[in-house]
Length: 279
Length: 150
Image 1 (cartoon, one colour):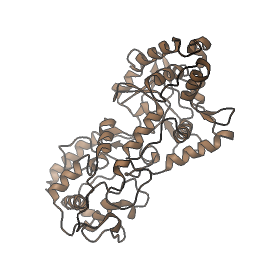
Image 2: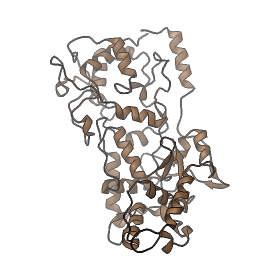
Image 3: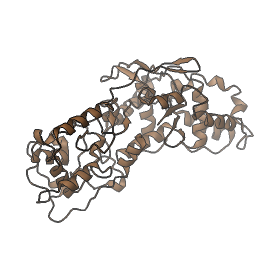
Image 4: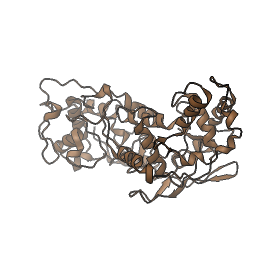
């Protein structure tokens, strides 16, 4: 089974062609709007100097899909979301649009979520949507990461596209943020891996055919080529946990909400890209 | 691509049967990170080890390590060191220790333990109480790695 050295050398050289070194230098613009895909890391990130959008780690073909809204299949679902928001549902005879006449009024919301509400609870956009449905519309809540929810949260997130992520992590948010940080560094599952093992210590390297990113969440809900639909961020966390053979927390759980806040804070200064395109 | 790889990782239900003569996962004796005695009491099969090394449901070693001896497989990982001529750098005993539980030699390594008795946090139920590889597969992979020399 020993190889001739010449063959080994040739094989090593062929690998050099596939070696990747961190993110690329491409710039993301959508219909002429420049969207920032890197920023100085916030002070609380001790091991990372610059944060990069996952867009910078994808192939040029995948990147191109996000540069034109006609090529971005996420917009098929944005259209679904707009229809859902105009549809009356529930006992009160209301739609989203009954109260939220101009969807543009949601500009800026995505960049601030999750946030702590007046009751001291950490709230996500999905929870805001379901609170409106159950309390104002008299409608059934949607499944946390279901297709209606991802469609409507994509519409709302899109209104903040290009705005910098800026979540509060101090004051009443501090304890949630600390819990999220703890989860980020906790090794879990049969493979005994933490988020940090791949997305902080090894971003930019290839894990088999995949280019590891920093695991930023500024583009969610994200259209994934893998399943040809929008994917909610908690659903993505769940997928990562299963990959390391860990029992995932539930979508909408306190753990995933805390992790979402912590990850959002690690993307401080990156632009909202909703709906982003990834593989 | 990520999904294919990760799906492969997820789907790998490792063999978990412990043959009577095998060292139990919790009884593996480490000495400076090495494991001196064969986990099966016998020398492994390098050909079977090469297959287990490649198999995404078994070692899946190429996920993280490049290996020029396996040019027919594309997309070798870069997370860990390349394994070319690895037998020149480590003894069989050291390789057995690293494959069984690399943290015994490198405490902060990302490398998962492939044969140990520690129950991880929140293991997926279908993997609970199971090792990634069987003792036989560890020995086979160690035998294969020993062929990677000048």
